[in-house]
Amino acid sequence: MTAEEVRAEALEAEERIRKHIRETPLEPSLVLGEAGSCNVFLKLENLQISSSFKFRGAVNSLLALDDAERERGLVTASSGNHGNAFANALRLVGCEGTIYLPETASPAKIKDLKTHGANLRFIAGDCILSELQARKDADEQGLTFVSPYNDPKVIGGQGTIGIELERQATEIDAVLVPVGGGGLIAGIAGYLKSVNPEIEIIGCQPANSAVIYESVKAGHIVEMESLPTISDGSAGGVEPGSITLDICRECVDDWVLVSEAEIAAAIRLILEDHHLLIEGAGALSVASFLRTRDRFAGKKVVLILSGARISLETLEEALRGST
Image (cartoon, rainbow, N blue to C red; front, side, top):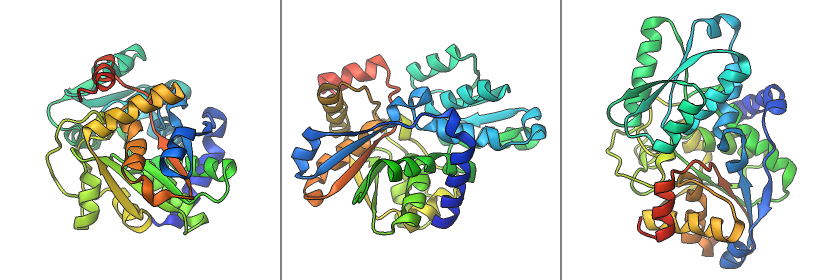
């Protein structure tokens, strides 16, 4: 997909899902602005339905399906946030579906999925194995597979964040975006770059699991082992041939990798200074900004807080600073 194709998908998604999603606030951060001698705004996707940006892409995908595709049965794969968004979207459209998860998925996210009555299937190993198994089973059983990121409708749904930013702020210089499989940054970057190529888009990943970053450097999706990370929502492998890679190569200007201690410190800062709960993946943009703050002096910067789903155990570790 090109930036123009992403823009077209985002505009279609805007018409399709606007009445079903929240326009999340864009909140100034005085403490971060002071730290970087710039104007910093937080895009609060942690307040989106399902507590994550993922609802945008999931509901857009399901609403775009025709009756036959829905009636075949729906499957997806998720480490948690997309699964929860998928479960919410299933209720909205009146369908049933199954969510494939890695056995290592966050207990808090598994509990949420069970609360929503989702059908769950657990797969051993990295989250990419859950994704590949879900797609394989869908192909063999004639089911409809809904990708967590590797699909134009998902990317278009996430691109509605860019549309909101265009409404909410003028003259944005840079946007820092958490990255896992790349659906979020593909949607935001594709839309915003098509509107204003001068906006700097910066991808943020944990150093312990930087698959897309390494893939961009290599020019193809790489297979690599991910180490444990507090940013569990962005961790793990990426489906071979994912369309998000080309969009990242075209539209993402730079990348920042952050440590586990930096992610935990960002969670604490947002909780203490903004009284907002964010998960590890949601803290990547904040941690990346703090690591590179000097480059943003005098600019207007947006940090995407992508989600709020964090287990009490992980939150306690972050608050203790022991991560």
